[in-house]
Image 1 (cartoon, rainbow, N blue to C red):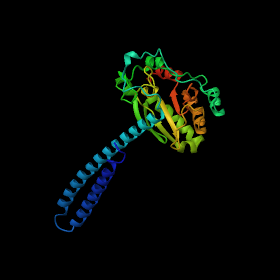
Image 2: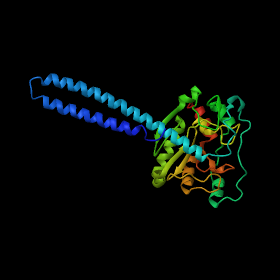
Image 3: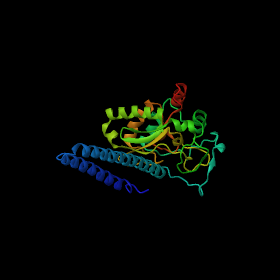
Image 4: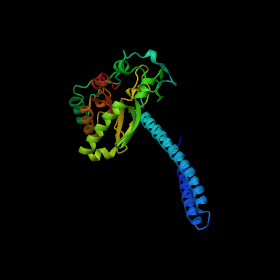
Amino acid sequence: MREGTLIGPIIIAIGLLVAAIAFAVVGAVLETADGSAELRMSRSEADIASLEREVGDLKKLMSELQEEQTRLSEEQALAVARSGAPLSGQLEVSASDITGGGDENFGPSIERMTEVGTLDKMAFNQGISQPRNRIMLEILGHPRSSYTQDCAPVTQEKLRALMETRQVGPIKVTMIRPALASLERIMTKLEATEPEVHAALGTAGALCARLVRGSKRSVSNHSWGTAIDLKLEGRLDGFGDGGTQFGLILLAELFNEEGWYWGAAYNREDSMHFEVGVETLRRWQAEGDL
């Protein structure tokens, strides 16, 4: 779907309907000059009510189309950001073949990292454990029955019931509700302490049920709605280059405070990636939030 293809005509249609409502009101006022004013006014009110319902329906349709555009935009950005060694064809892997026993951490460690990159690995994620597939499957189960390299819907009913799409500060994302509540606290702190970073923030994707790019046996944590990729001023952080945008370092401090694990610590550095840590997931589970 090309962005704006349907929303433009819908906006025009809403404008025409609003104009029709205004015309009906003016007509009703003018007609009050003759002896059947009350009858005409009653008919005009009925016409206005009908037109208002049509406007409401069109607004609802426009909102749904905007949400779909946002979802497609997130998926496209995520695909670009995570492009790795592609699998031949469209290999589909059954959930039963993924047990979490063979988690992969792709690529050799960065030997010559930038000073910022080295600092990231040493100073962050203290006391926070990376949530590998074994833990995710134990706590939340498989999001769906099979996976490919492409985003697909979550089909597990219990997990789907936890999902919600919400505007969180400057970004709109779909995640599980405890993660959204945590993300809201992070965004509130960010706006108060680093308003320029808050204003520049964008998302490169959140919910996306698929395999890890280049893998045949590891499920991406985006599949559970517990991970998010962030960008600044519309730019993605370089993937696996050892460097990190300064704004992401400021963000990492806030995410760590909320118990999220920062992807800068991966063997193949992924500084724009944040995911809920094991300890936080366990706490949510114990509190009945999952």
